[in-house]
Amino acid sequence: MSTRLLPLLIVLMAGVLLALGFPLAVSLASAQQQDVVVDRIDDTARVAALAQFVSEGDVGVAGSGAATGSDERGTMLEEELRRYFEVYGIRAGVFYRDGEAMARAPEGWTVPRTGEGRLAFQEALLGRRSDDPQQVWPWQRHGRLIVASPVVRDGDVVAVVVTDSPTGQMRSRILEGWTYIAAGEAAAMLLAVGAAFRLTGWVLRPVRVLDAATHDIATGRMKSRVAAAGGPPELRRLAHSFNEMADNVEDVLEQQRAFVADASHQLRNPLAALLLRIELLALELPAGNEEIASVRTEGKRLGQVLDDLLDLALAEHAPADLRLTDVGALVSERVAAWRAYAEEKGVRLTESTGALTGWADPVALSSALDAVVDNALKFTPEGGEVDVTVARAGSDRTTITVTDGGPGLSDDEMDRIGDRFWRSNRHQNVKGSGLGLSISRALLAAGGGTIAYEQAEPRGLRVTLAVPRSSPGSS
Image 1 (cartoon, rainbow, N blue to C red):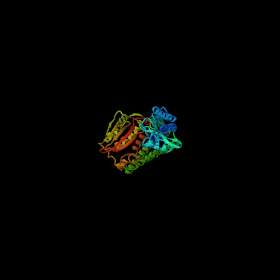
Image 2: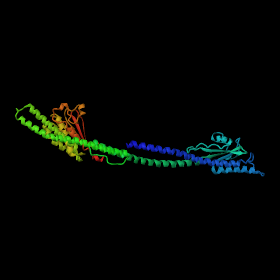
Image 3: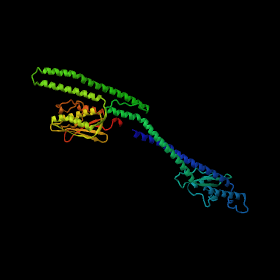
Image 4: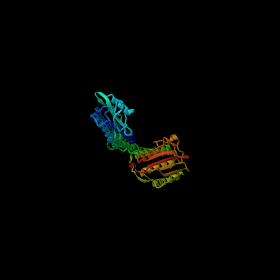
């Protein structure tokens, strides 16, 4: 869940930062250009103030001996524009309405005939300052700012002051400001990612604990509960409700187990008394009476069912004593114990073991293996073979595979194998209660183990018992 929630939070935070960053960057660029434009407006206003007292023809004659005040103002205007260009690199000029120059710097610069410069000149001829130029961005290397102001004399526009400013320094300042913004955005993004990790962990910690507890209960560890943890109040309430539900489920299962165990135990004495009376009655009947033989068989079968029910209740109730177990040695021991019975039935019992370990309850694993081997020997005909193999399954499991030479099961029967009291219709005459594999499953589940079934080739059934190679609590 964290892999889905975390990217969502990061994308949302990144979107917020970008939504704030882009307008800030545009505002910074606009402010930098506005400062330059205001400065150019002041400059053009000052030049226009000097130019309004210079009459046409006064410029350029200041070198004569009969220079007048107007001549001096014309010379002063030209000198002012020349120094302005030399110091700031800004082209400036005062142009009459027909485009002829009153004064300009550098020499030969004229009013632009097209584009933004021409538009600014025409607006100034109408008696108003030109509009603000278009925004210049850092990547526009040849961008320039053109500002024009009218020169008004006696209420008429007689000339226009035009400045054409380079934008290199302004673009550098904008780019520098953007760098600071980008650095701030990156730092804020790092903080946002850190906050997203913390927020995700805070929100999902109860979910992970709840998931672990649910998995434990699903695999048979009914004592598992959700410990008190942080997180949103809704998840804390969910954890509390889960614990209450688990307590109720455990109580119900405990009542069921207790009932089965008590019923099995309480029925043994009446059954034993009943079988004893049957034996006493048999003494008064002729030897070989078929009805008495049938009653004896059914009584013994009922006793076996009660014993298996008690074993099943104990297997589901008793906690597993998990420890690191030498599975190979345990299998060799149990195979040796069953070999005499196999020889009596005329079945070959073989093993293939090694120095493999697993995390299991040795007693429970031995009992589960006994039930599986007993089942395999029952259904393997004389002259057949039962093979027990210990192997490693991946890096986290040790398996015990028992393959018999019996008739096997159909696909429909494979879906029901392991169910309590279930037996194939073809095997009703074979001794058993139908609880052996259910007991094996309960014994293995208590320690985190599993049991699986599949068809063997060319015939028979393959049963695989698997136990973890490390403690289930360490994962």
